[in-house]
Amino acid sequence: MAARKKVIVITGGAGFVGSHLCDRFIRDGLRVICVDNLITGSLQNIRHLRKDKNFDFMKRDVSRRLLITGPVDYILHFASPASPVDYMHYPIPTLKVGSLGAHNTLGLAKLKKARYLLASTSEVYGDPKVHPQKETYWGNVNPVGPRGCYDEAKRFAEAITMAYHRYHKIDTRIVRIFNTYGPRMRIMDGRVVPNFIYQALHGMPLTVYGNGQQTRSFCFYSDLVEGIVRLLYSKVHTPVNVGNPDEFTILEFAKLVIRMSGTKSKIIYRPLPTDDPKQRKPDITMAKKYLKWQPKVKLKEGLSDTIEWFKANFKV
Ligand code: NAD
Ligand code: UDP
Image 1 (cartoon, rainbow, N blue to C red):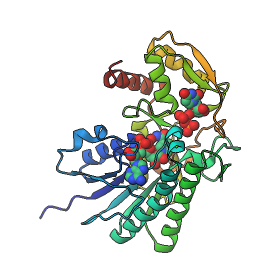
Image 2: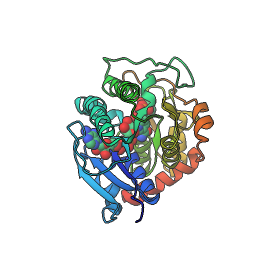
Image 3: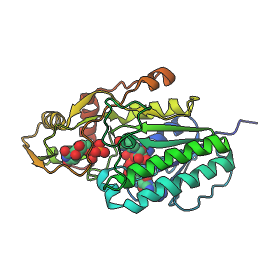
Image 4: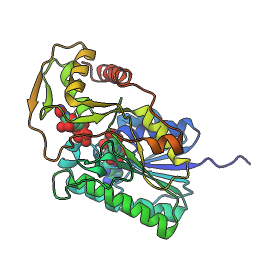
């Protein structure tokens, strides 16, 4: 008798990162159950998978009780609005999916004896006072500011994941994802990469918030997916940063987008959102040591693919 295929549940699987994970695990020969309520995701991202006999889609809000029949080997909890514009628009669903959604999916992991991987974020470091950010840094988060709904939900999600690991002996992993970009981001999701590309391709001014001296480090989605897969198959239970340590100011990034998209767009300055982190760069020593992982795609390469994808998909 042929061995049963491993089954992986991916919450948020119709989103930007989640849909690339669905692709990867289908390619690797697993059976994928994608669970998503489409609050910020899109069926378009998984349309090419719908006819695959190893792929199932369930439209569900994972902040409510989640029932799945049959065996489950792995659960990846990626459901959550992720763009600051999205999570500030949906503060309560964001808090619920980070807390109740994590609780429900951990309960499912316990029932099915499945391995569990939580998508956490560099936002757990808040506006960091330590640079670059190491996993041992506890962060500087304003719990009652506008970003608190996301940051604290993810911090709670990490805490409950570790509690299930320690108390119920669930086999868990936590990835702290730093700014990731690429094809399938929503062009209007408000994050800096789609915003600048949209503005550049339409000849509109690029909106730099503040003086543009705040920094970010941008990771291409394919590098992130590889890091997540390696973490899932590793034995590391404490959080691991996965991101690209090449750091840029937002002003430098705006100029790069203008150059690479060949536009005559200018730069205009807009107020810096409340609590916008001033600097962000992952320390990836742990990922290098335990996952033998480091990013391969340079910003110029990844940005060029992303610009081409936006051109092809949004008929600019
Ligand atoms: P995204 O908005 O494209 O994807 C999130 C997906 O979750 C969407 O498909 C959305 O519909 C779904 N979702 C949200 N709430 C849900 C609920 N209650 N029930 C079911 N589905 C729900 O965002 P993304 O960039 O792909 O982010 C995916 C995950 O990675 C998130 O957990 C996010 O916090 C984390 N992350 C992403 C980044 C990044 O730079 N992309 C950085 C740090 C962390
Ligand atoms: N940003 C900007 N112009 C935009 C969108 C974002 O200058 O049109 C800045 C934002 O203030 C932040 C950085 O770009 O400093 C990254 O923002 P993003 O929303 O992508 O995610 P964050 O890293 O803040 O979660």
